[in-house]
Length: 307
Figure: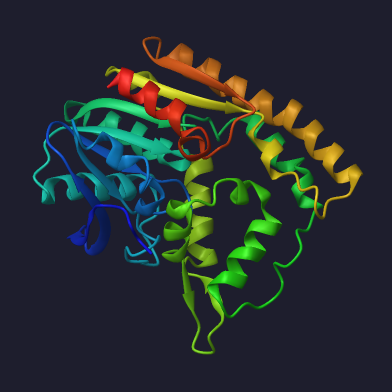
């Protein structure tokens, strides 16, 4: 059950309905943006902790959760325009943006287009360069191309069975399966007329978003506002399963994480440090990509000091 103390509503902007959560509070607006495949509820636990000094919101991107799922509009300009019109609709002139993972493109592009509206930026394991050759090499040589998690080809007719299968196939999710993760996941699935549990997001939308992420050219050098960026190293170790992986598969994944994955992370850190020299950068060794959940206290304390 959704127990987070928020208002849940829809707002019509840019020709579609977008879902958002409002935890209330007074002061500057702090807007959370989720990563690919996630919605506003992913912040159900962290976000309200800031409502004592900020007005706290979280927006669900088009193609996700309770927001509309149009066939088009997944390029960086449209995604960023969604945010601008959302803020306009709520009468928000200036904002602090905190984004996870793919929200990097929206934070960076919104700042480039509307710098006068941005107070501060917070990147939650987000400020990565996915257009680099290092990233493409990491993806092309990923062991996951040869490893097939169990249970993904089966049909499930209850949320309990579906989520249990996902947690077994992807142990990184099991580590962060809090009430917030449960709630947000309930908004990312639906039932077919036959009662089968399936993802709400179509493969076409997922591909369009992935293409946008990998095609985005960084605009970090345009960031002039105070900036906080978290980076997680060796996060891929959380994907290793002692339940169903062979020793050879586990060894291959560990090698991939410690070499190609970490190489890309460090390359991204150095590029961001070069482009945003005033940024505060915090590295989390052997952390979780969903650091704001698995390392919540660290993230909360550092965000508090920064804000």
